[in-house]
Length: 210
Image (cartoon, rainbow, N blue to C red; front, side, top):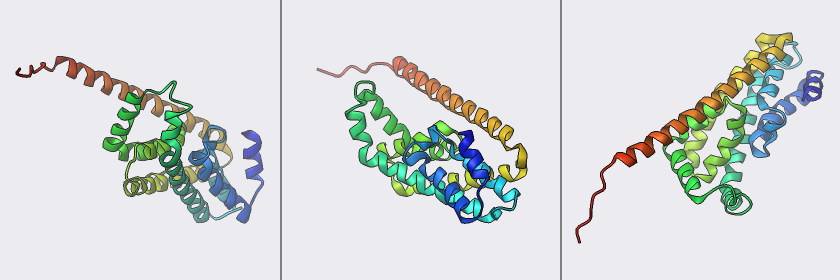
C-alpha cells in the first residue's frame, strides 16, 4: 500500500486524476478497498492539490464521481450475482433466515446505512452489494449514494489538502475512527436484535379457537 501511495504522490495532471478517480470507483465494485482504501486515494488527491500538481476542484470532482459510480457498480453486482453467491458458495455459512433479516433491515434502514457506511472502509466496500442483494430501490440507493459520496469525497480531499506532508498520520487516525464506527454499528445491530428477541419472548401467545 505504501508503494502505491508513493507512486501516486509522484504523479500530476490527468494521470493523477484518472488514478484518484479509479481507486474509489473500484473500491466496492471489485472489493479493492480491502487492499487500498479509497479514502487514502482521496486524501492523496488533496495532497497533490496542496502541492499544486492538480487543482483542488478537479481532485474533488474525480473522487466524488469515482465513489458514486463505484458504489453503483457494487450495487449492480449485488443485485445480479449476490443471491447466487449466498445460495451457492456461501450457503454453508449464511442461513436463509439471516439473509431475509438482512434484506428487511436494508429496506427499512437502507438510507442511513448507505450514507454512514461511506465513512468506514469495511462498510464502504460491502454496503453497496448488500443493498443490491436486499433489492433496495435503485433510486433510493442512488440518492443517498450521491449524498454520502459527495460529502465523503469532498471531506477526504480537503483533509488531504489541509494535512499536506502530514497526510500519513491523518490517514492512520481516520482509519482508527472508521474501525470504531464499524464496531459501534455492529454493537448497535446486535443490541437491536437482542432487544427484538426479548420483546417477542414477552409477547403473550394468543391461542386460536378450535
